Image (cartoon, rainbow, N blue to C red; front, side, top):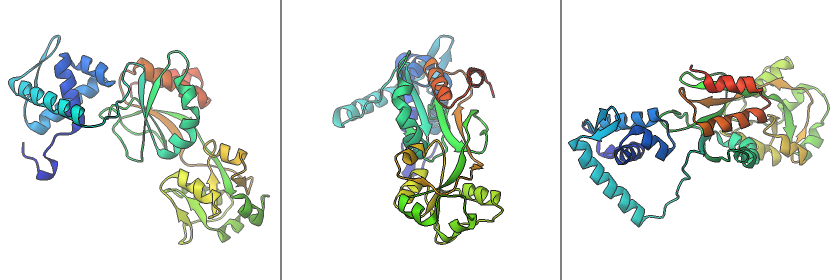
Length: 311
């Protein structure tokens, strides 16, 4: 198979899965080593075989055996990984059956997960949660992600989803600006005199104004940020009015860094979801899912159904 000069190396994750399967003699052994599912290892190897245009393994009743091409690649891969290990400083990821890979967006990671991470990891069994926080839409199975927490409007095809909680939003501002605006149930149109701060989706503000019988469209002097962390930073620095999204903002209000400037609340069109890839759930991932669900106020039956659902 031909590849452009800009993409002359196969994806590193596929090589890791291949090397582990070759060393362990089975996809199951590789899955245990890499904290992936058997299916994820199989897909990574298939991706590598497609990329190379070569068959690397012969599937057998008890594991796999390298083809001649696979044997040559394995020797080269072992040498390359040994060279990297000897010549670079490495951050070694924790591995083991109690490690859970959790993907989320930065705002949820910093505002909701981090304050609860120690609690989620403690207990029996003790867990080690490795976090991946960015705005990319990841393929949970192919990327070896056990669980994901996201903000959205519904379930995503190809994932098993459980609604964690909804948000009832209300306007907040820095104390100085709040004193200027007032904190009672005044005319909602008064907020249109201020810069309104929102993240990449202004649906929350549109919903809040619609509930007050007003139309809202983002204006040039409003402030838009890709992440809700920055929305709160801007509001705390007096740059405008933001919508509080409980429970992400609760600590800032309790600390007096933000003040509610209107008591009227509206249901955010987006809510928070716990996702997992289809298929069996590892015991450690199931334990973390139960702890997250309990923290979100869900009943045991809802969490149990999430863990056994097929599609």
